[in-house]
Image (cartoon, rainbow, N blue to C red; front, side, top):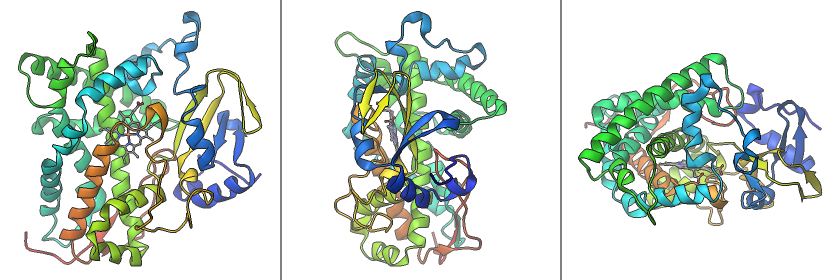
Amino acid sequence: MMTFNPSDPEFQHNPYPVYDELRATTPIFYWEPWKIWFFTRYEDINTLLRDRRLGRTMQHILPPEQRYVPSPTLEPFERLGQYSLFDKEPPEHTRLRGLVHKVFTPRRVEGLRLQIGNICNDLVDAVVETGQIEVLSDFAVPLPVNVISELLGVPEADRPLLRPWSNNIVAMYELDHTPEQERLAVQSSTEFTAYLGNLAAKRRAHPQGDLISALVQVEEAGERLTMDELIATCVLLLNAGHEATVNVIGNGLWALLHNPIQFQKLIRQPKLIPSAVEELMRYDTPLQLFRRWVLEDMEYGGYHFKQGDELGFMFGAANRDPARFNNPNGLDITREDNAHITFGGGVHYCLGAPLARLELQIAFETLLSRLPKLRLAGAIPTFKDAYVIRGLHDLRLRFDPVKA
Ligand code: HEM
């Protein structure tokens, strides 16, 4: 087998040639250093995401004495995971997801259209006369935090707190993290939990039209969210929601810039934006890896997997699989048959996909229509040294200045 190392910055900066080789030679393989079975083919990943013999956790099938005991030092961080629907399996996952679904509806998402447009326009107003934009810090990073804050009902003055909290918490999603990262994640979890507890108490006393008020009041067949569940849900919506969205904007714009024919076509035909957004999410997948645990001994694809084995689904590899996509390494903003796997599949399918799509479409619409002749300013951008969350350090562009 070729040299494969997901911690190698060279692989992280451009995993796609390695994926092509792995998919062709060893599409399913065990990687001893992380003790993970990796999967690279679209069909395998798409099938296994729906296989109920696998779970995001296996806590629910273990006898109580074997269940994971949260470490005292990580408790505030782990508590958020413990009560979050992200790390649950049916039937508890079904109950929690049902309660959240009841209030996080397509109608509520559609109702944010105007505010999302305003947020995008305000961010562009701040740079439009200068002729320069650092796409990530000027636009892509503040956008999702503001949108989620708008959705949840976090007052504007408190919003600068959210990004560092969320950053410190999501840093733990990478497979290797340092003691300092753990300390920051714990501190941020403690502060964030206290903040949301306070906000929920205010909304319980004086409900408003926001999602926190709706979550406080939600009830289905006598079931309610506990305070721990409500806080974990809000943190999840913020965290799950923003890193990926940031990176689709950065990676996506960068992909367009080095595919100038596609870029020009999109500028001339803005009605292609919804299909372009789907293609950008397929072409450079913002979340490269999701894991599952084997809940019972099973066979798949000629391999035997034992209870407790860990499987790693390489979404970026599945999205470039020639058995599923024509010319998978090419960017085609008009691609019609584009069932990419970027939002996952099965019971954990991304709850925020409609919001992510709306946000991304409006983001690209605003950037492309208001910043004429976007082009690279200076150095070629570089990807961060991280595997799961794939994104650029920065993306500095120039455009022809316009009077605001
Ligand atoms: C481009 C942006 C996004 C991408 C690529 C993305 C991707 C994903 C993926 C792949 C999963 C499934 C994980 C698994 O199967 O293990 C997921 C789950 C989830 N996402 Fe997203 N997401 C995005 C945006 C959002 C937004 C904006 C929100 C909320 C506002 C959100 C909320 C969630 C939640 C709550 C889950 C957990 C669902 C469950 O476990 O039942 N996501 N997301």
